[in-house]
Length: 169
Image 1 (cartoon, helix red, strand yellow):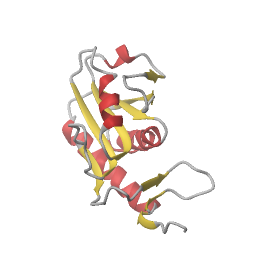
Image 2: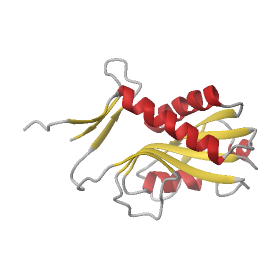
Image 3: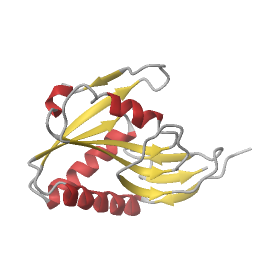
């Protein structure tokens, strides 16, 4: 049996969501000189790059991109970043992921920054499914989607063979 894929967002709609979230970030951080955009590998990092581009197009804020690789199956935090976490010290950090489902990935991502002082830490997701097991809520959301647990949200971004899109299957 083949699972039917329902198109939720196409490339243009994703770009509109990203631009709107960039404006929300700007409004929330008007007096900041630099923001750390920390994207969770793979798709969260792809979204973070697009948010960075959109934010730089509308503001003078310097956006530093950080890549976070997490072991989501580990029972304790195991994370690797491409730049030293201490560089986020006393700055605004925005943690980016593609889909918020249980909240485990964002909770692990937040753990990366627990040992350093921050101005503030915000979370951004393209899709919020609202099936949380962890007390994590996004500060910036592209789309809140009511789904049942057995449904799957697939974000396709940065794949050369396919156009950027969000599907429900």
